[in-house]
Each structure stands twice: as structure tokens, then as C-alpha cells.
Length: 433
Image (tube, rainbow, N blue to C red):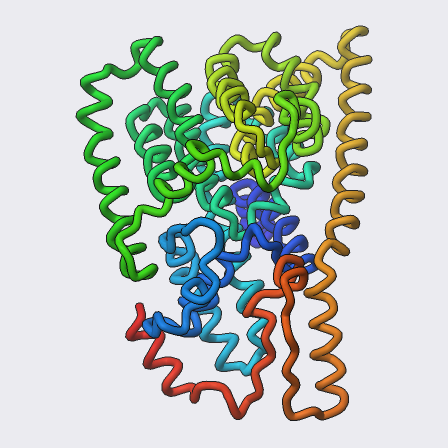
């Protein structure tokens, strides 16, 4: 009886986390490889974990990429993952397991901050709204698939989740400071979210100009100083990475060289694919509860501002998904509570149909994504051939296409005779930490 009670308490406290975390973990295990957009952070995590203080061996010095990125996000994830990577190394597991570990560590960070946001949803709108929020998130593909991918957008997403939570909690300056950190250090385009939220808080007199200067100037200076200090050391030149990214993408508009889309693309393609059932439900939510409008309109302004830039990708607006899911959850909750009434009963059936369609769309997207990393699968097969033939060593050339479609340094297979001795590995890890 006692164990049953403990299980019930555990599920009440952590059931939603277990559900979302399990889905994200399945995505990591079944689709473990990474794309070119993730290359900087995934190689940075590899180098921090395996080369540690030997900066001359870091990948970015040989392959710097189009624009520099900060090491701070990769450093945080690597520190969290390092005990598990060390354990895997002591067990003589392939280096590839470290890729799974760092991705799960990143997913844990994002989902932990989403948990904080969910708690504020529960406090403000109730348990049922939180339950629908989890259901909608679980039946969407892109959010949980992306939350473990080492993209700057995803590293920033964890801070955006915190900002949303602080916003709902009434800690407005903490919300702004979270967005300032995300903007100055991880993704300069978070400025497009920071400005509408800050303006809304000013217009509603929840903050003042003097208060914003008093509470946020120090954070901005600290973030800029921190990223310049750390990244100047790592890149071996004086550098503020996100300023260079801002200059390249926004001022010079060179991101357009990687493709452009129409102004409406986020609303007619990216949001429908990422939100699925939540897209029409989020629009309905704006009509059934006025409270959600004050949170949704600044996020809509963020997407409208972003739409001005010709180069568009779904991951650029992934941070808007939690707010749209909230609006959709409020609509779903209203429909569910009134389902015994005639018109609302029809809406309830439509709701069930939309959720089933979302689930079907998620399964289809997952199956398509599995085969979207051909180079990773090819290298895995090559490792298998070498293992079965008892081959001592094989060298292969990784061309541009392969490096862009699944292969990273985590995919290297290292012979036991070439591995660091466990004693040296432990000593260097402790020295690094």
C-alpha cells in the first residue's frame, strides 16, 4: 500500500517530466546524428570533453565556420555531461555514446526550464490547462525533437522558458534579464522577443524605464563581458560572437545566401508544421480567455519582426511554441469542460480528431527524420565492416556533404591502444573541472 502511494506521488510530481523526457530520449537514441547547423556546438562539446585544455586541437580553429559562436552554452552542457562521459569511457564504450549523453544533457536542461514554465501555467490557469499543455507538446514533433539538438536556438530556448516562467510569476525584471542573457550570449535574434515583451511591460506599467535601467544594465554588461572574456580565449582573438552574428545576418543580410522565403512563411508553413493541432486551437484560445492575449501578442510581434528577414528557418521561432501551446491548452480546456453541451460536444470531437492528426503527423515526421542523416548511417556501417573483419585501423575522407549530414567527431572510432589511460583521463577531467 505504501509503495503504491509513493508511486502515485511520484507520478503526480514527475509524470509529465517522465513522459516528455522519454519521448525526447527516444528521438535521441533513434536519430542520434547531427546536421551542419549543429556542427559548431557539437564539435565544441566534443573538444571540451576530449581535448579539454589543449585548445590547439579544437576543431573550430581549423574549421571556423561562417560566423563565430560562443563556447558558453557548449561549456555548460559539457560540464553537466562530463561525469557520465567519464563513466562511459571507463567502461570502454565507443565515443559515440558521448554524443547521446551530451544531447540528453541538453534536453534535460530545456525540459527542466519548461517544467518551471509549466508550474507557472498551473498556478495561473489550473491543473487541467497544464495537462493539455503536456498533451499538445507530446503530440508535436519539432519541439521535443529539437530540444536535444545542440543549436544556439535551443541553448537560448532554455533561457526563454525561464523568461516565460518569470513573466507569468510576476518577476518581470528577472524575465527581462533571462532574455538579455539569451540575446547577448547565445542568439542575438532574441532581441526581437525581448523588445516586444519589454514594451508590453512598459505600456502596462508593470515596469518603469528607470527600473529597467537599474535592474537590467548590469546584467547586459555582465553578459557582454563574460562572452568576450571566454570566447576571446577560445577563439584566440578579441571577440563578441553574437555581435558578429548580428552584423553578418542583419546588417549585411548575408544569411540570405542560404535561401529566402516569403514574408508569410512562418505563419503558413513553419507554425502549422511545428504546432499541428495547437495552431487552430491557439487562435481559438485568444477568444475564450482574455488573459492569454497579453502573453501571446508580444510573441506574435516577435514572429512578425522576424518575418522581415528573408532567410527563414523553423528553428528560428521554436521559442514561440510554448506560448502558442498555452493558448491552445486554454482552448482545449474550455472545450473539454463544456463537452456536454451540444455545440461544444462537436468541438470536443474536432479536438480529438486534431490530436489524432497531430500524432499521425508526428509519427510521419519522425520516420522521415530517421533517414535524414545518410552520412552518419554510412559511417556506422563502415565501422561495422571494420569490426567484423577484425581490421586494425581504417582511414576515410569526410567530404563536405558527409560533414553536413550526420558525421561529427563523436562518430570517430578509436582503438583501445590509442585511448588515454584511465588514470590520465581522470586527472585531466578533474583538472578541467
